Image (tube, rainbow, N blue to C red; front, side, top):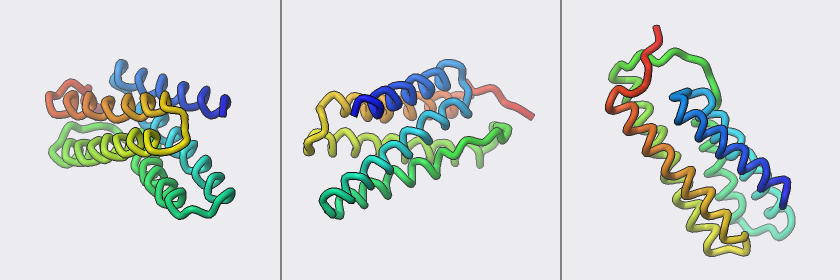
Length: 139
């Protein structure tokens, strides 16, 4: 469990650096790796007890990882880019709010819910920055 906590903490730190530096690549790397961490953890739980909830949770964080596959595509600030950003970041927020709920109803230590709460709030900051043109436009 300790290695997972260290990796999760690093993912949150990388995501936070992405927000502070307004760097989408760092932001996405944090969510991508965190999503993979949850997927493999849940698949391990499923292998232990065959409860289908673990497959559902793994699938949800698999979606998070797919949404945040790191890329270096330039941000042009257009309507399409803003629309996609709002949808993706809203999805990340909902997934991690659900994660906080799941942690509170399971045997996972309660402090892990704080990880999910932070990962639910950071996309809202990103949405604010995108909608208020606080993100640098690259050409």
